Image (cartoon, each protein chain N blue to C red):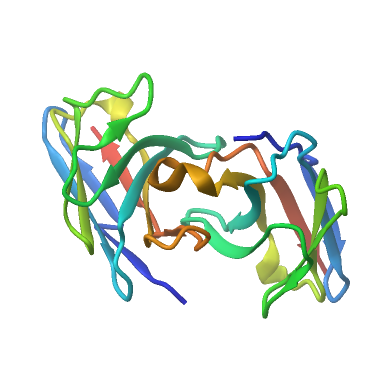
Length: 113
Length: 116
């Protein structure tokens, strides 16, 4: 699976949009981009995933560049409860059940008052 | 959304004890389940992958005789830490995925294991 690069940490004011970048310059055509977050002492929570089109759900939006070498997770109105470590992961679907999520170090997002 | 339940949430036991952790997918059939371990201030590290009815595939450096994994049904997998020692103290997290290729993995809330 391709590796990803994320900033170590970011701050965001409550109520503002949080934009979390991720570089995945070696991504292959078979690989989806997944975003998870982990709030302290809990298991990771799935946020969103996509292949090449932008995606939006009730939690966030995912913007993937046309060349697919980077993406941005957008939390439109960050709250204190969004403080967490956010992981950007690419996963190859065509290896079937052997396909697995490999976690990097993620971005620690701190939402402040 | 999909729910994965993990039990127990935390356990404290004496060195040499074996500890079993259960992972259940509550509202979907989990073709594949994964077990991760996370040490303080570190990221999740995959320990093993199991498919229902098959032997688990362990990551390099993970002792299969120490970490016994059973995935006997499409909704239940267990991890048994045998003869646990203080260095096995960690946060163990399970994850499950259905057989549909682009569906995400969902994670349990983890088990904090402390070996005295």
